[in-house]
Image 1 (spheres, rainbow, N blue to C red):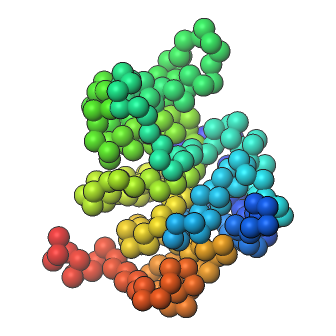
Image 2 (cartoon, rainbow, N blue to C red):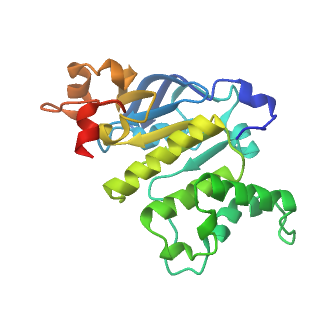
Length: 265
């Protein structure tokens, strides 16, 4: 978030150069070149099994590429993870609904990971937790049991857990899975607010290109290779859509000024 003075944030948030990932004889990612700019929202879209989660795990340094180079803010992923400059929300992130943790407890976990076993959280830790909850509009529900929150609220709390470490980039793997249309829209609007007010860089993986097209700055269509990378408002070539999603798939983009969209709300 704003105020981070680490010199590492001056580098490109994410740079993938010639990335190949093989599992045995199976090629999962082929010759991937992709970069993300400061303060933009990028969505990586593609069907199930297209390599999206593998790409994120490679970007985070959890999966070692067979070839190519990965840099987060110009550095090796492991170095950046240790500094907390990237908040990562894997696919299906959740907690046991019956475990008696409050929303505040869940967010505090990220700060406890940085202190010794018998050390208490500092005032700075508590301020970071409160600010993270405020950024995702969950401060009023910080005492609520995590399992009692709605799906959208739980996702906000998990984002707050990442934000409590003051990252400069969020990497989210299918974060809207299981949310209804209204909760999904509210969740994506929250990400736009984080970009606009905090200068946050956000990478979202999704299998649904339609749900993210209205909020992202750029989209990358992935199916083993990158078949399109650009602004959704410029239009995605039909050939790229067919290679990624198959035939009979159409993409309609309506921006926030679309009169038809406003009348249908």
